[in-house]
Length: 251
Image (cartoon, rainbow, N blue to C red):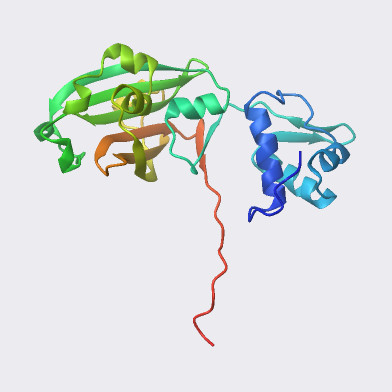
């Protein structure tokens, strides 16, 4: 296998991401070597410098450890990493990384919008919505709380069994034949309040990552609002940025 040398993404990042994916998928297990420097050079048709920079990147992320004279080995990691390139559900992210996940439904209730004080929903949701609180677990440990809002015309047809077995995206696309087109998402830090701390088995005021997202159908209608509260020790986000060539505005 060789790297895409036509891509704008540097080769060492491509190599690091490929090895990282093999670690996440269990192809390279914790404690196993990722391959000698010479092996990686031949396998991916890259230079010594590229391999060294990729390994350093993996070491910086604490995914591998180098024992001089023995090689570089994968370290155990319990942190989930979400790549912000594609619009995915939590369960799709877990499946992609080869992790076993489970959910616990803490709340499921149709409520009037007038009861909301802080969370403003799109006008297209109407006067009622389905309120869901669902804890996500990896290796039987809670890592995230999802607070979900779905318009009542959809939510009234969702069952508790649906929520136990499927993501909201799966239900929208397969049960209701609604095609998801795009989403708007923000990410910020916040402290855990007493409710979130209890559900995530954490101390109150524990630092959390909060992701808030509104998803739209291909007809540009909002069909879901979700607030995710992640334990910062168990979850991270990654995005690749390219600095495009720009023509100077000045002669």
